[in-house]
Length: 405
Image (cartoon, rainbow, N blue to C red):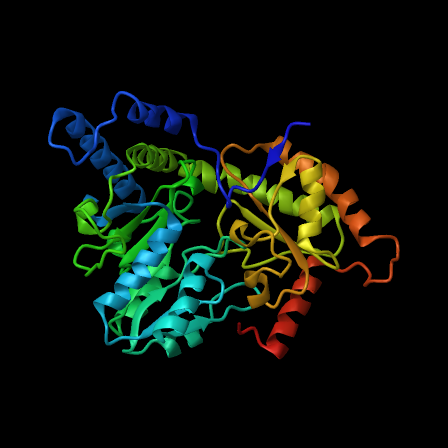
């Protein structure tokens, strides 16, 4: 059987047009973009073009607001560390309990080494941010708020434009990890109060090892990597020109295919979810099913661990995820599902424009037998219950026990 790849939130296939755009910068166009001669000048022009392509995708007002980095993790780290440097009298960070490890691990490190106070805002059983707790955490001591645009496991979208406005009221900077959202959702940063935004090329059919940090003009920025004067003095080091060109082309293609992402890809996701829920008892879709990415389905299976399902699907050529790729290999439950007080195993299927109906059909063909095998023949668990009943029970339990993380 043809392999089925449904783990696009972990990484995407590099688009052939992106590869073709990059190839000359490994061979003929090999100059250093900082060089004053013709070899450097043509490469520098290609970097400027990529900056404009990315500017157009995210709706930045100026192309010099784009700083190229090695990826989302570096961008996240640079944003938070810069904010603390820019406001030494502010020693607090506000983030969420379901952020990517690139943010949460750094926050834990800062707590231990620099005595920074971190507010980790909880989410409810559908992965939605506790807005009351968020507003209560906003004080003049907060240097930066870092809330992701969309969660990488559930696809739940946070109201970052509104959250940024609230952060401005106490003078805090606002950063969003938009790695999963860029290229999937329309953006117009110039009309928001967002100060910084992180993105990564390999999440939108670009190459790995390249990303960017949007820094709104006028925001004081302190470079994480120091050395030369590249990237407007925000990130020293010779530019990764092939990667930058690839990211620029990926951004242009993402703009072109965004309608496809929000319609055809979304219909594939919905078809998979409906098929699984109809064929397999005691399953439900996790997270907010209204405010979420069009490509992401996170489905919980009562009485089964997600990694067990993932392993058996992999054996029949289907790639999916039991959580974030950055936490794979751990036997601990996903921190996102723990924050949602989720007692069941869940599997994430994430689509891209490469996928088609045959991929959905293949999953629906094999999933019922896999789940039946894992649940066994003991029949000692609960009887068949609807997805609504399961979700209601989960939310009720979360309300009794609390969902803070």
